[in-house]
Length: 74
Image 1 (cartoon, rainbow, N blue to C red):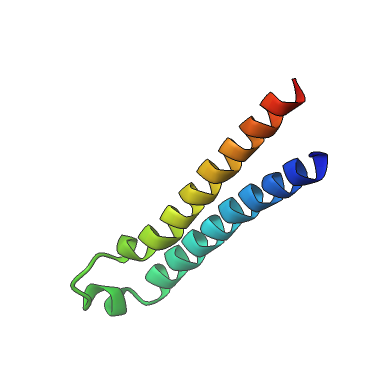
Image 2 (image 1 turned 60 degrees about the vertical axis):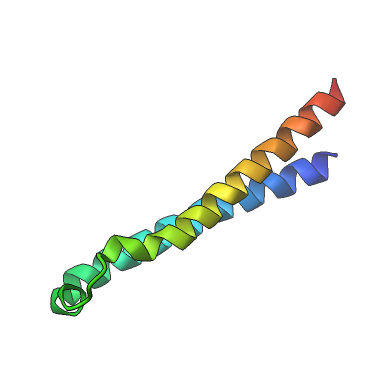
């Protein structure tokens, strides 16, 4: 169970890290090429919806898994 708990922690951390990396890259790209994003009909923040949803899903599933593991240990 400790190994599964460790893997859930790793997956949760990686999902947050990937989202933050995507956010920082997108902020840099928007500042580097503002005309490109001004020409699009959707705001640039729309590109963060799918990675954000995946991150939240990983955090929820990981949190529930860690909670189940914690309850089984007691």
